[in-house]
Image (cartoon, rainbow, N blue to C red; front, top):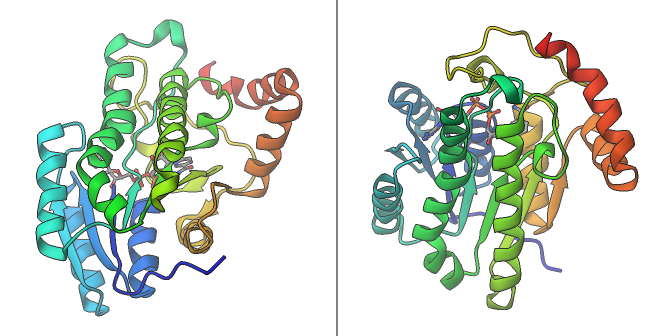
Length: 269
Ligand code: NAD
């Protein structure tokens, strides 16, 4: 199959002001794409957009809280108006939660679903016609928690499983149009995600995070995601521990539950 190129393509990245999203803006920008950075953090967005522009990358910044359908629609309309359309939509904006189910308020589930699931749904709904018209691609930054359980993160895992169901099903609907969906399931990547994790009461948790294996950098993750996007892969699992976890969870799901819970149990004690 011919390799997809991104020169002069319009790439929209939600959560583009930090972590993996920012690294993707930098990488796709270096590949010649026009970058629309979507984020609710106005200061970080302006700072990072200026840095990209200084490197000669064509960029647009859109302050947008993805939990608002109106703001998502307006952001995508502005991008289509300014850049002519959307070739790649990276649904990446996300938050996490670390707390036992019994201690977690329903409002935390609602908040995590609003950002991770509904944010991606709203942006995709607004951009889908343009993506289909341009035989483009949707990249969904899911998680291993989208394809396997994750201890102490029932809300996060539920939101990522919901994304998995939505976007693998959508892929079957749009495949014949030439448009594509690629799911990314990162293992642990060094970003601000965990420092902003919600506790059971909805405030930022102070509990330390346990992790399995070494964390990868956002820049390296972005390199691998862009390479997989060039090949229009269906699924990309990142980090050595992530890949191992993925296969154990597929072959021996109960064994996986036991090992994973043992590794992460100390977080909630
Ligand atoms: P990060 O916190 O560094 O970046 C997330 C970005 O999303 C931030 O810029 C934040 O401002 C933005 N954001 C949050 N809520 C928003 C909202 N309502 N509207 C608009 N923007 C919003 O974290 P990251 O690790 O780079 O996370 C990116 C994605 O990667 C997330 O979906 C996360 O679930 C996924 N992921 C991360 C890891 C990891 O280990 N870091 C592992 C698996 C999956």
